[in-house]
Length: 217
Image 1 (cartoon, rainbow, N blue to C red):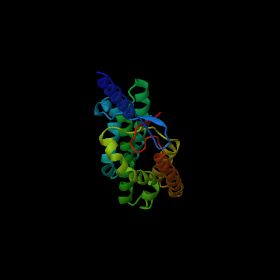
Image 2: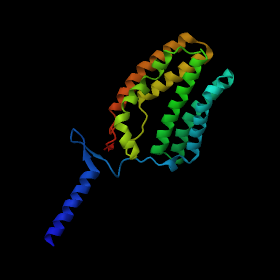
Image 3: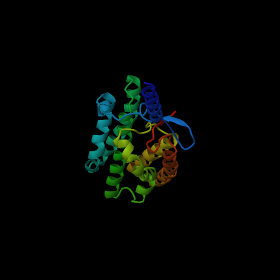
Image 4: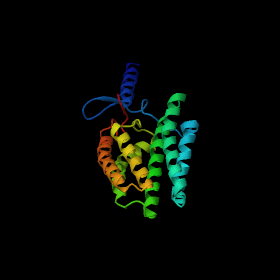
């Protein structure tokens, strides 16, 4: 009986240890129960609908470039949905890990497709692709560490960073400048996007649980 109780205590301690891991500095963080989960059902709401509209615009953007006036307004509307989906999610209390994840990746799809289309139509220099997506290229390096945690739906919270927001602002200015034919402004904005993107990309490595070990407490 005594041995049975000892094993129960040991198992309980082991479970608590798994739930409360320790990073290299000995700081406790939640791994299992407190890690945000990715659930597809969390995007089946009005904020998710707005994100879906932006995805539709992103996928169709190369075709919209055959109608430049339509493309400009479509891009502007896509940026509006990027602002509204997050605000609506907070207003309705429907913020979720899946929603934040989808919002970020759809935004990347939009800008990659838009930049590619503009390059194909000779409206944007190809070098802009390097300047506009320095953040994404640095994030790409993190994929080997994130595949497993994302597959298990165990990732750190998808929270916007100040440098990330600044990168997105300069990125949008670059696109509008290109659409308007203001290439001098576009070069300045693209260069600032690249610089801010480097800072933002490096910042993602410093996120708590950036390698999928959970949410820092």
